[in-house]
Image (tube, rainbow, N blue to C red; front, side):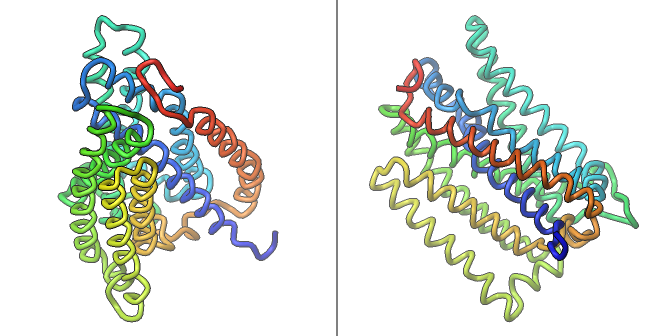
Amino acid sequence: MTGIDLTVIWAGIIGFAIVVYVILDGFDLGIGILFPNFTVGPDRDKAMNSIAPVWDGNETWLVLGGGGLLAAFPLAYAIILPALYAPLTAMLLGLILRGVAFEFRWRDPAHRARWDFAFTLGSWVATFAQGITLGALLQGITVEGRAYAGGWWEWLTPFSLLTGAALCAGYALLGSCWLVMKTNGALQRQAYTYAGRTGILLLIAITVVSAATPTLEAKYYERWLEYPNILAASQVPLATVIVAFLFFRSLSQRKEVAPFLYALGLFGLCLIGLGISIWPDVIPGRVSIWAAAAPYESQLFMLIGAVILVPIILAYTAWAYWVFRGKVDEEGYH
């Protein structure tokens, strides 16, 4: 494989894992965020049943992304982890809490209200922590030599809180669009309403975050606003406006599948914008993917495993979604 840049390949694999995680786990976290708004009883059971067959498999991609970062970019892992211990720990605790609550709400009906609260709390905490982590990376991590040199609270800024709130709005949008696609009746009508509201919130958040990002680093400003980069970069906000128009039109036409696809399109454009801002850095403005990469031999060894396992994960994930492709009610899929 002489001449092939395995560092770029591994950056692509980890980026792919993150994209798939956002797509798949985003909507079930979003359902948890919206959960208190659903009527106790059949509507909550429908919402839970819509994600029951797939929610735990969705988090496989988070493990792949985190494990891949450790194996392929150990320097980045060694810097990012101490810089973001607090939000990353909060994310994991939130995911654990919602997972336990998901299982026990069925097995302990006498305390279902408490488990429903725990499911919602875990979803909010996990999502907000993920958004804060992204914001903290974007705003910059203090690095000296090959180590983190910032303080314990460096991750906590108005910008990171903003990205945390933005991701909550985005996941809630995915969750509401998923319920539009998977349910009928009163719950679906409620989901249409929440899809419209969260769509507006997400667009406001995208606008504010996009306006603030070029002020964080000189490189961001250069890549987005200086000529000739602006000619290519400006296509992202233009495409966002078009996709947003199509999204709201599909809601007004009471389409069932299209809103979810357009919502994914909005997330995809946000991720493209993120790539424009940070590529080719793994720690924006501090460490490039090549500086953080593991030795070539290690990357090659791990790539053999990834080539075998990633298609298997994709296959069983696709099969699960195909098997449970229909509508859902309080009893399950039909």
